[in-house]
Each structure stands twice: as C-alpha cells, then as structure tokens.
Length: 274
Image (cartoon, rainbow, N blue to C red):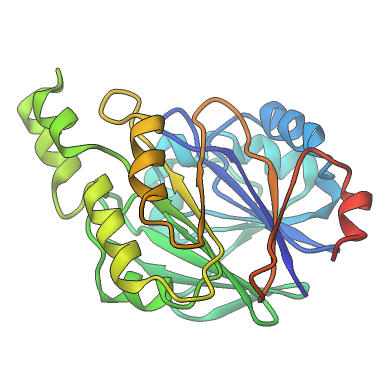
C-alpha cells in the first residue's frame, strides 16, 4: 500500500504536514488555523473525514496554534506528551488527549506512527516516522543537529520532510541580533542548508524518491537557492521546496521508484492510482 503526502504549510508562520493512504490520514502539527487546513485540503481534493489524528512535535506556536479548534470541530484525538501540552498551554478536550512514548509504535488504522526525540529548544520535542506496510515517510523539522537517531530513521525513508532552515552566510550577514543567530545555529536550534545537504548526501537510501525541503527561514534562506543546491545533488530523488505560503501538490509515495506527482485532484481520483 502506498502513501499520499503534502505539506499544507511549512515555516515559522505555521507548519502542517499530511500523510495518509486511501482510508485514513494523520496530520503532523497544525500551526495554521482550522479554516486554512480545511481550505488547503479542499483545494487538493483531500477530505477531512480521512484525517483520524494529529501528532504534535513540540509546543512552539507555529506548530500548535490551530490544534484546539481543529480537534474540537472534527473530534480528532491529539497525540501529545504531557510537557508539551503543559508548556504549550493547549486547551484540549480531555477525551481527545492521547499520549505516546519514544520509539513505541502507535497504530491509526493501517498507519503506524513512531516518534523519536530530537534536539530542539522545546520542552519535549519529537520527530516522526509514518509507515504503511513497507512505505515510510519521515517528518524531520526543528532539529538542532542530525544526531544518530535522525540518521538511523532517515536511512529508512522513501520520502522525508527535512528541515533546511537557513543559509549560513545569509544568517551571519543578516539583521538578526547575535543571540538569535546563536540560538538558530546552535545544537538545539535549526538545521542549515549545509547540514541538511550533508545528511542527504551521506545517508540517503537508494529508494528515497522525494525530499521535501521544509521550514525555510523567511529572512535567512531562499527557495531558489536551496532548490538549486539540492537539485544539483539529487541523483534521482525529486526535490520539493515546501512553501510557507501555500500547500504543495499531493505526492504518491511507493516502495518502487515510479513515484508519481499528482496535482490537485479529488481523493476519489487518487484512489485510482493506489
């Protein structure tokens, strides 16, 4: 069975990633409003009725601000750790709160979600692997540095949302104050283009079909720059830059290399290609 994935938004103004099959889907984070999630999914032909849960990576506003309304309106369980909920001050209905533990599989229909800890300046931050049969998709953003766990899971993925937050030269010469520059490039900050590229070149599996460059800084990066940088080294992997302003197309991820990019079509139509 294959997976359909899209970035509904990616950046410091809001993050939300969709991963699903023909029957069910999950969202990783929802840092845009419920209305925007619904609007963007509708444009892509994706139905909210397929979404069965939200998984929360950490408590920063650009990852959680749409979750309370989205959960209440669509009666969605929210998988979140206690420190994340406490520090994020999320007002969730008790019946919708679910917990998860690092490296333990959570089953949502035929989707298997595995969380693992990451280095970021948050209370209890996680990245996620979403799998269905043999297909695996990673959501790896807000990472201070590519630790052994990131490397291990990256090597398993057919497609990855990978942070490429900043260009080192742009950050150094930019207008941010020194303390903020240090936070961003610190071990609990964000991945630079160079760090993301090194991870990609050193640990990309032969079967990785898509790389979504995610969480680009508005001030310290350029979509054209990072697209060009990674495309030169793609070697058969399709490079997609996830926008901070709009959704990407829906991409159909298989275990084989014949991965097909689908434009905005209905989910019923997408099922014909499963």
